[in-house]
Amino acid sequence: MSLLRMHSPLRPFAVCKSTGEIGFVNVLQPPLSADSEPGRQNGQRSGRCYSHPLVLRSRSERTLSLTNCSRKSQALWGVPRFAPGDDELLRKNRCDFIGLNYYRRETVSAQPPAEKVSGEQGVEGLFYFVRNPESTYTEWGWEIWPQGLTDGIMMIKDRYGDIPIYITENGLGAVDPIIDGEVVDDPRIDFLRMHIDALENAIALGADVRGYYPWSFIDLLSWLNGYKKQYGFVYVDHQKNLARQRKKSFFWYQDVIASRGENR
Image 1 (spheres, rainbow, N blue to C red):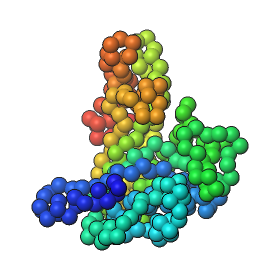
Image 2 (tube, one colour):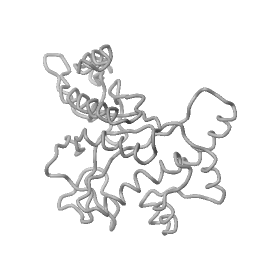
Image 3 (cartoon, rainbow, N blue to C red):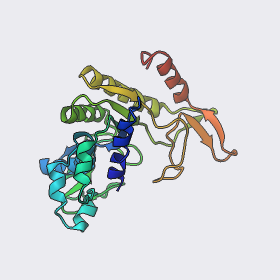
């Protein structure tokens, strides 16, 4: 399984005494719970099942309890499966950093939603993803919640201490408007600005954040939605032999980088 494959090279890499580092990347979707227990369950499923073994060198108590469930329940939860000797492999190795892919927060409930939500539905009988009537969503049903990035980073810090953190993905998927030949993606600029602010807040609170990598440089294929929405700073025109064009956000982020974040 991928979790143990991740651990396998850590020991020989350490023996080589290389100056490099090995980390792992996980999706960060901090849950807001309409009821406390579903939020806790989803947090265990989406986070501790994977990060706990890689950082603390052991499985969380919740993961251990889930390994005694039926294989059907394990599959629903996405619980890693372990074989004899795997725990010893975990104990001997530790990752150097955590990468986080953050796009949205999730609101979960013990009750199924009155109206079907897009994307993941939850785990039947345990928790369901529901829409938060007080929040803002993208056209694809993803909640825009920058505070979730601050909260998620601090959750990792509280749980695992001062391990270095990289934001390996963060961005807005949208249909970008073209006005007078210019790709005017103001919503993307607003999204990234708010999330950089949230990242700065986490650093001010003491988190060891080493890097921020927006998704993405260029419009590309989404494994969920194909080319229906765009994420990049560079537009790809599929009607004109894949011609490239720099968007408004390209020049904005260029200035953000040049000013070391001051101009945003």
